[in-house]
Image (cartoon, rainbow, N blue to C red; front, side):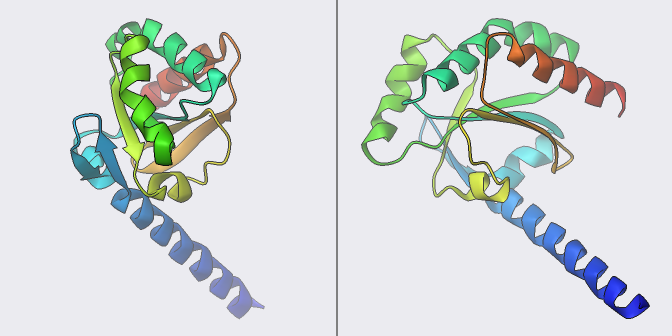
Length: 163
């Protein structure tokens, strides 16, 4: 009875290690054209708010506009890194910079080059926001309605307080 239980535990531990490795190896491209792996960001920061979005999703741009409006206030209360990660492909990639400029966003914007980060975090819906602490997914929220961004901030506060 103990042997199947141990095998099951080893399977989950190995799966978690592989998932964390694929998270750290995911490649992101900035608006400036610089490509980096997520591990390079994770070395500097331990608390992330990541929002997967698309230029073709009005909900996505609504969420990012709402977050952008309060981002400086949030960052003064909680040290975290905010990353908006586009999942656009093909011709839609050309809309990233114009959308960024049109909305006067001030945060970091990246493109998930090969969908690596999205796969590693099992992101399926847009917009989808995730809080990562010490390279572990702590919380995720799919979709957006006005005011739901404040719930993300409350979660960031709680995680920071519980460090």
